[in-house]
Image 1 (cartoon, rainbow over the protein chains, first blue to last red):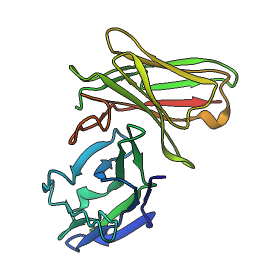
Image 2: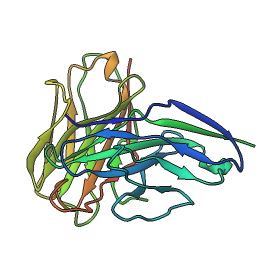
Image 3: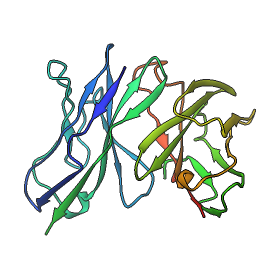
Length: 109
Length: 117
């Protein structure tokens, strides 16, 4: 069965420090992975998806099939990055997104 | 603004009652998904509809049901409500059913806050 694991519930860094939010997955097929961000219990916003290989708000994520990981990175954290971040796997079979438990990022001044 | 509209935004009701949550997908999107976000369970997939037909079921209780209408809006019906049903219920939509083609992106509404007292 597919699973998305975000091992850290909370990640606290200082402004300007590098950030890495960890995400590991298990999936038997070829995965499609996403990162969503949620500010203060608002709607989930798509941050980025691995097939696009894009950088949004300075965040990047690389799919590592060998390590089954899709970690989210940003070289210099900003205070406005403070939010909940969810890693998600699109399950082709169940036709739905499976989410990790989320990591709260706190960026301190 | 994602284009996915949910009503009501907030709802307070008593145990044992029944409520209906409504969702209008983005223009052109045929798929609608429902998710439940609670403090202890995180984000849980409930159910998906595509062009009026149920496509996938997740952790949806038997007390809950959903449907998608010909105009593609969807309703999630929650009955015999319990305190533990208090959560944020998200609707999401996409052009196609998840997995139908690579790159299908799912967009979320702002959610409906349900408080059961």
